[in-house]
Length: 320
Figure 1 (cartoon, rainbow, N blue to C red):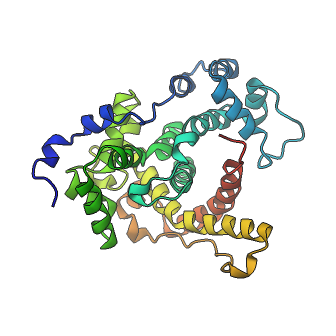
Figure 2: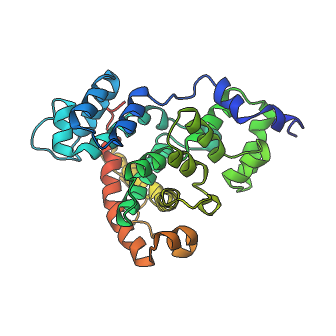
């Protein structure tokens, strides 16, 4: 049994401040996000901010030179990348490069395999931004970042469960998950709060914009956000649609690896592109964003093709 005082002892702030391996949002990435919102933002300014963080700069250039973009020539510096790919594309590359290293790790407490969380985070970000563009939400950059960070709380809680939590807590979590309970219900029963609460708490500590904090907090329950937020709605739809894609894309990539190693006979057939959720699965966001079922079908078709390409780009072993 869980200790009766567990909920009173285990607070959001305890986990946020006492788990030493928690990631810190890179200062350069935060500056880039804020600068890109300025009406006077320039390519030179964004390039300068990226260049101030050598590790971030290296990752951005590796991604920009990946086969996915198929550029005719090598990109030698960040300002060159901004000119060729566009300011918004490089801004988003900086966001994903800043988070990739700690999002690609397995999260054993949630039974998430290596890169599984990363795939879902990026998929959510990409699809949410596509939704935002389709319905003309003005803050598409906020939508992308919110989608990328929506499951941030799982990292914090997962690390705490692995390194700090009492053994009985870990046992209870595994027992509950074996009964096919949802992550949210397990979190509430064990901790008294969810990964959405934890993630939004960290986002507040990082001084991220309120729109991003709200999207992280309400990504599973957009109807609870008051007042209603189109950014929250976009992230929710992105999350739901991304979850239908991740397993298919991972299986596809595993099959390719099997073919290279000569073990294709043991692999399953290539999965088909997943069917998008029906509007009934996301009624509030669909209504508020004025989306129809055919919009989801079109979004799935466009997103799946791009998602596979991006998944391979970020699977580059040289991008660390």
